[in-house]
Image 1 (tube, rainbow, N blue to C red):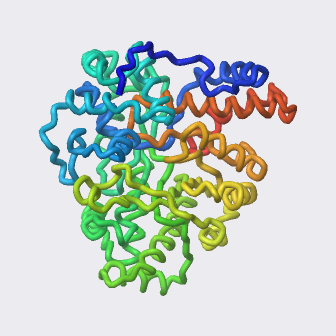
Image 2: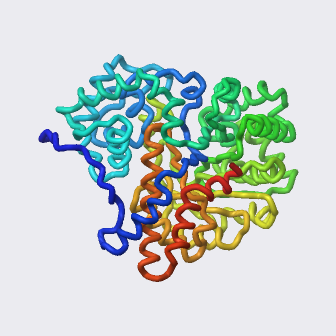
Image 3: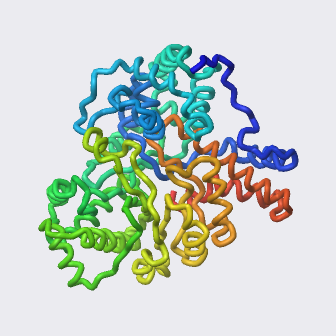
Length: 474
């Protein structure tokens, strides 16, 4: 590739409509939301960052290693994850100089042209680190040194960045087996930053999870319950949910292959559980058990108030060889056709009209927005739509989400934006993109005389700030 040393700039009108009238409206709307605090109610940042407040080690460990949006693109072009310093499944990694890994990334940065990753990363480079030349092979060392040196200063410690980014609250996501010691350390430190957890029980709910048997054993040890007994197993969940709530959790999260739910008679549920814990179950049993547990989690949510999230429709770890070498969450999750209308009916028959129950639905199957999700959320009081997720949290995906859900669900059966990221420094960039896209979408409605501008301002503020706080009980 040719070296590109032209200046790195961020156009003030990025993502706004090219048509002058709509662009002017979008500018005015954006001015009302640009500096609102960030509500990050669902994500995967590491709570140890904020507990210990230690400096991030270098540019590679901060911006490349945790971000599967980035290294999946590099892997798609034949770059081995070992060469990027990505940890193996057993925690080991090859002896790669982080500077060399960064150079490899920089020399391939052209792969991200036009992608949301380029929007986020260039925002980070420009606004967070003050870089004014584009990243490529020739500027790789300049970038690496500028970022790594900055990270050793007090202004770039995790807590200082949290405050600089104007984050009001951020939620991490932990397994029921997590002792939440980092959250306890944050609470005991006296720091005013609000970092809360969320209950993600997949490893002890999905019989096909590779850690299920061991996780279930530790689940019993941790809770003191006989988790191989159906009643004890359910008590263990209630106990851990209560502990998570005591540590600030306001939500649970469920990453299932489908959105199937079930409401089995007690005797059938118990018999199914016995097959599961004995390891004598079929794929159909595993799906039925996951479905039953979504309904059980909904029952617990009604009792303890945790907002329930479902992230279904994803064939996780599709690349088996990569999974064996590097483990989960390495960018090989692939969208699946997903049914919601039939799949959710057992759960909704039981809890769909229950006051106080809240269920936030996500999808990787965009074909369901107008056909299934928006009509469901536009009817059931408990249902809300999470924002465009994973492959679709790009400007085009956000726009499609609004276009296809507005007529049936409106704006107020959605929950605003959440960044759902492991890449801490990208959070302001991701929220900025969402705010700009929403302002551009609202500007179109105003220009078409479908919405008054003063109402559009209220909607923009609600989407950026009020709705996520309200939806997640924050």
